[in-house]
Length: 147
Image: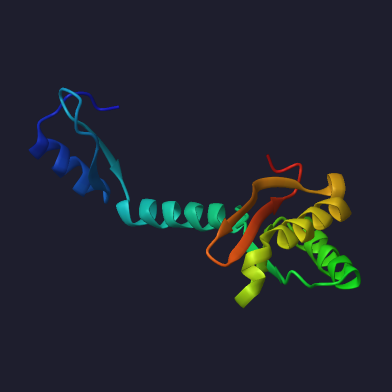
């Protein structure tokens, strides 16, 4: 703590000690400066950001595709895969694709989605319920603890 000093004197003092004069709070009256090794400060800040980035978990959106004619055994397999994705902390987008005249019977796709919800039960929570987008019926699932 040096106190209020002219800029020229502060620059000389920091130069004598081998430091840089860094403005910390420019909005204050008078502006607050600090003597520090700015290169080392930048290095430490970059190191902290790198550590923080390592610790954060990136949630991915995985997609499971089914058709309206998908049979029970295949639905069981798809649901097992959904469970694995959810345990890894990812979200899952379930898509039911309709081709040609299948689009006339969208209710079959809703039955498939309903059956998958039934199989998965309380293990999942809905982020976005089943909705039609073009020729696709989709819903997004997440782990129930991730609300």
